[in-house]
Structures are given as C-alpha cells and as structure tokens.
Amino acid sequence: MRALSGLAIISLASLAVCKPTARNMRVLGRRDSAPSGFTLKGAASPDSVLNLRIALAQSNPAGLEEALYDVSTPSSPNYGQYLTKEEAAQFIAPSTETVSVVNGWLAENDLNTTSLTPAGDWLGFKVTVAQANELFNADFNVYTAESTGKQTIRTLTYSIPAQLEGHLTVVYPTVTFPKTGLLKPVFSSVKARRSEDIRSRSDDVASSCADTITPSCLQSLYGIPTTAATDSSNKLGVSGYDDQYANKADLEQFLQEFRPDVSDTTSFSLETLDGGSNSQDRDDAGVEADLDIQYTVGIATGVPVVFISVGEDNSDGDLDGFLDQINYLLDQDSPPQTLTTSYGDYEPDIPEDLAYNLCNAYAQLGARGVSLLFASGDGGVSGVQSESCYDFVPEFPSGCPYITSVGGTTGVNPETGVYFSGGGFSNYWGTPSYQASDVASYISYFGNTYEGRWNKSGRGFPDVAAQAENFDIVYEGSVETVSGTSCASPTFASVIALLNDELLAAGKSPLGFLNPWLYSTAASALTDITSGDNPGCNTNGFTATTGWDPVTGLGTPNFDALRTAAGL
Ligand SMILES: *[C@@H]1O[C@H](CO)[C@@H](O)[C@H](O)[C@H]1NC(C)=O
Ligand SMILES: *[C@@H]1O[C@H](CO)[C@@H](O)[C@H](O)[C@H]1NC(C)=O
Image 1 (cartoon, rainbow, N blue to C red):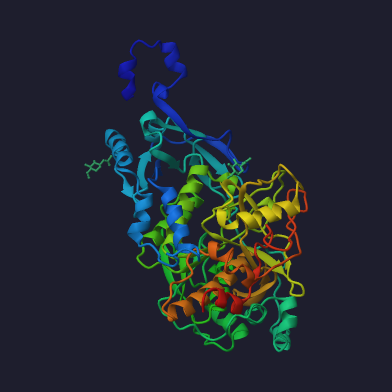
Image 2: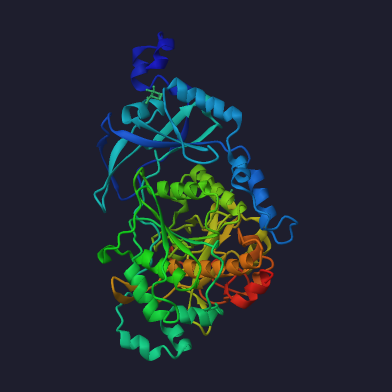
C-alpha cells in the first residue's frame, strides 16, 4: 500500500471504489471477457505463485527489418551475408534508458528477474497473486477450461505505472488465455491400410500420387532428389509441442514401407527444452510428430534432422512454448538452417504487442540465415481449424511477414488448392514490399468479393504450397492416412534443406529468409496452382488463380528449377 501515504486527504468513500494507485497507472492489456470455453471459478488464492514475463521495448525493430531484407534479397549486394547472433540481437536489445527505467521499477518492488533472451528484451520473474494484483492493478482469477477441466489463472485487465509506458510493452500471460486449438493434422480420412494395398501400387508412382501421398510420389511430382545429402553442418529442425512424441519404431517401419532405398536405421537427433522429452513407448507416439518426422527424414534424404521437443515446464500458456523455443534457438551459435513448425494460433487471440515481439524474434533468426516455415492452417479463411465466423480469421504466425507460410494442395492433374488451406491477410502486419505487386494483382482479380471481411492492406499468406491431403504415415505400427497443411510444411522444408545441402557443399550461403527470393528470382521456379478455393465463415473463401493467391501462394516446388534459382 505504498502510494497510500501521499493520499491522506482522499475521502474513504473514494478509496472504497478506486484503487489508490490507479491514477498513476496506464492500462496495458484488457479484454471484455474470458474467451468462450472458459468459466470463472473464483478469485485466485493470494499465495498462488505466477510465472510472469515482461517484454521491454526493442530499440530498433525497423533496423532489424532493414538488415533482414538486406541479407535476404537476391538483388542486394549483401545477399547471403548473414548477421551474427550478437549483430542481430543488438537491434532488439532495449535502450539503456529503457533498461534503467525498468530496473528502477524492479528494484523498487524487490523483483528478481531472469533474462530470457540473448538480447535482454524478455525478463521472467515469479510473484504471488497478491503481489501481481498490486503491481499491475490486476484482478487475477481462476478460470476453468470447459473441454479439459484444466484451471488457469488470468486477469481481464492489467496496468503498468505511467513511467514504464513505452518501456515495458507486454506482461505475459495476464490477459492471454491458453489455447487448446493449436494446429494439428485434420483427421478427415484417417484409415488403416493393408500392406498389400501399398505394395500392389508401388510400381505405379503417378497413380499412387493421385490416391495417397508417399515420399516416392512427392519425389516424382516435385523432382525431389532421392540421393543422399552430404553436408553434415546442414540441419533441418522439426518443432514438437503439446506432448507430441516422434516415435523411432514408427519411423523405421515407415522407411521400410516407403523408402526401401535408404537404411531403415536412419533417424533424427533430439533437443529438448522446458522439460520436453520424446518417450519411445509406442502408445505415446503423436500423429503430428510422426508425420513431421517421417516427411522430413523420409524426404530430405541424408539431411541431419533434429526434433526439438518443447515441454510444458515453466509454462503457463501455449505461447510460452513458442517464446521459449525461439529464444532457445536465438541463443544457439549455429541454429538449424531450416525449421518447420506445424502449430499455430488465431491471430486475433494473440495480443498485438506479443505478436510483434515474436515476429521480430523470427526476423532475428532470418537475419542470421535461418529459413522458418509454418503450416498455414487447416480452416480455410476461418483460421487454424474450421470455425464459425463472419470476418475472415488470419493465422499466427502466418501473418508475420518474416516467416514462410505453407498452404496445401491436392491432386496431380491438375494440382489444385485444397479446401482447408489456410490463407488470407493479416490485420497486424501490412503488405511487405516483397509481395506488394503480387498481392495487388490478386486484389484486382478478386475485387470486392466479401469486402470488409478481409484486410486489403494486410500481409497476404500463404507464400507457397505443397501436397496436404491423404499422406500415408506409420502411426503406432499401422499405416494411416492424414491430411492438413501439417503435411505441406515438412515437405516444403525438406526441399529447402536439400537445396541448402547443395549450397553449403558448394561453399555458398544457405537460403535464409526465403520470401524476398521466392517472390523474385524463384517465383518462376514454382508451379503456379490456378484452381481451388478455401471456404470458411460461410463463404467460398478465396479462389486460386494465375500468380500469387491466398490459397496456394506462389505455388508448389519444382526442384530442378529451384536449384537453378538458387544459383546452383
Ligand atoms: C532477490 O535476490 C537477492 C540477492 O540474491 C536476495 O537477497 C533477495 O531476497 C531476493 N528477493 C526476492 C524477492 O526474492
Ligand atoms: C488492416 O491491416 C492494416 C495493416 O496492417 C492495419 O493497420 C489495420 O488496422 C487492419 N485493419 C483492421 C480492420 O484490422
């Protein structure tokens, strides 16, 4: 009750209705109500301990963006001259003024923090609910997630002292509720298949491609080499969340069935954080993890694959995992040159400042030469999954302009945008210059259809696409078929990893942040997909057409042409 001393003449009546510190506080986060699916249980115990994180204002995000484009744009003299860890972090490191203002406040309140990033832009600390309510004029309550019964402590509003305004941009998780709807494969057609069915068709790749997708079908369709990559410094990272474990016995069986030309002992390495693990009990296998590992190890032949399993320790919300993983990679001197992630969230569910902060972390990795690929979502224009909506719902992080978003296709003759392919326009980020003319052409084609439901000045996604329906995987010992843009992202990432292998072997820089290259030199090296749409929100969604479109992006890979576009 520190501020009370100066307020001695305020009447008791007014003290009763407003907190004494309110006049010096500025609201930083607020929501009208808990998201649907959560019910208020009651006040949180004052002694419960919260893991809070604060984000400090970044000193020069515009400089980071400029540096990112400078090293990622083929026409730039600095193309491929990637930044070091320290150089990238410097743009993001808070200014000395910000550090001193925030440190003053931390000391005044006796808070001990841990720095969570190399740049020092995130600090973590533990406080009791009572302290947090006092520090942030908050009202932390217990909410129950109806679907899981899991309890979570959140507030609907919080404030910071006026002197921190502009220096402290986010207190997390506060108003950000956990999500249970992270991007997962769509189980539209899971069915076990008998082994004889597979063998009888294995000599006819084209017809198997039209029915179910296998590594050999993708190799044939996209011209992906089957010979083994050779560069051991090349790494392809696969993100694992949500206690999804990649099973080695499933991978071995998958290789026996679908890549008889490579050793069935070919495997992957494991990195873990936040108490992540990779249980090899076959019952613990995760469909998403099995899919992602089988279509990286099984396509990026010979490329060292690393499964990065993010656990839930130290985690009080799903975005903790995203934050921790990216900070874990930023801390590495040599992060994987390619990373594929088949998880995402609804953009409107992520507070804007937190979204910008994460997106800038992706920009740092891009500036250091890392290609980040994310699945574009499985709900068409309605977001991560199919949902009822009026306005189209963009996905995060697909709306972030510093990553490559991968949409989905189906069929081979012609290859068509698949109905669930997530696509649209961000409300948080404007159209970046690398795609400005492509997006303008699309908007002039699509005109005013569904006007007002999507943002004509937003960053358009996806950037590219790959097959996404009826992938054969081995899951808990049997062959099953799965669909989703979760299939497309590992496939496209494998293509990039194989190109990087050749670049590194030739003594050249890896491809790094892909988009400026994709939208210029490499655009004609992709197969333009000109049919299909992505319905959602009770509409037909967007329609694929000639050139870039928000269903299939610029198109699907043509390995030989991409190799030439990469200067090989
Ligand atoms: C913070 O750290 C200092 C020095 O390690 C310690 O004396 C103090 O008790 C800590 N304060 C809290 C609130 O944990
Ligand atoms: C549309 O996108 C622009 C650019 O990011 C943004 O400034 C604007 O607020 C968005 N409009 C809506 C309605 O969200």
